[in-house]
Amino acid sequence: MVFSLESKPLMAQETFSFPELNNSIRLPSQVFKTTISNYRLTSIQTDYFNSGSWQLEKAYMYRYSGTRNHNNIDFVHLMDYGENPNFDTLEVYGGGNDNWMLAETCYKTYDEQGNPVQYEQISNYPAFTAKQLYTYTLNDESTLKESVYHWWSDDELVYIPASKTSYSYTQSSLTKMETYTWRESNADWQLNRETAFNYNDGGLIEMATFSNFIPINPDVSREMYRYNKNGQLEEVLYQKLQEEATSPVWHNLDMTIYTYNEDDLLAEILLQGFFLDSWRIKERIIYSYNGTGLLSSEIHERYAAGQLLNTFQYSISYNEHILPDMVVVSTLEDNDWQDICRHRYSYENYEDAYFLDDEYAVYNIDIQPNPANQHADLIVINDTSEEAELLVHDAKGQLIYKKSIALYNGPTTIRLYLGAMTISNGEYFISILASRKTYTGKLLVI
Image (cartoon, rainbow, N blue to C red):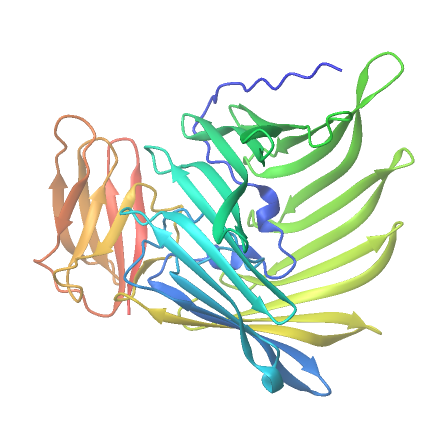
């Protein structure tokens, strides 16, 4: 069998993200992508409904040492709770009210730019104690270049490398991942998995993986991506290369189909498996939204042999700052929803509450509180690569600030301290007018 992992150059600037990271069955990660805010997560409390009442079973307590840029890439995915905050220390308590104990402690360290470079996890469950360490190396663009997993040796009292993954990019997009295992016998890294990413003008179209964990029977698989006319992911086809009588043939394994509602929001994810020359449903995820377009519920239908096995619902509520404060998990029993679990979230405001309502509508605009005067001033960064004009309107549409921004020597980042205007509570509209496009966003001051 001959298999070549050739990675085509990127045809358009695209940021790659794994679709499956957004399909958590614990808590939909879309919840934490609803707003840009200065609030950070401080705790998650998990309760189970037992004997007619809620009982606290587990808690995640986050601690921070200073202000972290909440837009920084976070490479650590600890749990299936979506995007994780840039914490310094995470304490996990478990056992319930009657047997409460500290079961796990996690530490993260960062570089000067606020990117995570090390993550240590120490477990202290009664029947299981362990320590593990992840280290991260970044390239010049602060993009993940290499991650290494280490396990703790009680005999040698040191961390020993076990596996690592290297990442290669073309024009800021991921083109190759290589996974290695440390071989003590020859004191060297052995390549056992290689994944290549191919793109076209629309984005990622193929992810092909060659796995050599079992040398006598290497595994070759691929994922094929298809998009709709709006550029949204519409289909992912999973295939495996198998040796036939005459030549290798790609065989279908699974397919994931994404559908969207009239507002272009994700409405359904359908997962199917290929069995006996036909597709059979494995799981269906149905999304619902509230009147403001925030995700309000997910319904998961799980199937076995094409028959409905069970149904779960995740209902999401938000606090006054448009952040999720509770997710209730329930199961369908005799046509009635029965609560089985809930996750409660707490936050702290680590800066004055300036935030934008739409991260996509404010492309190339970065608005931050002025450290010298957080109660009045803003820093507006113009990165449109041309001369532009800054406008600030109040909620009534009155122009309250205007300034021309001239760029020198090509693209330049301009910081404006708006000391001439007084910011009070309410809504403001920020606009940067450039010749090719107008960038706008709504600013809330709380």
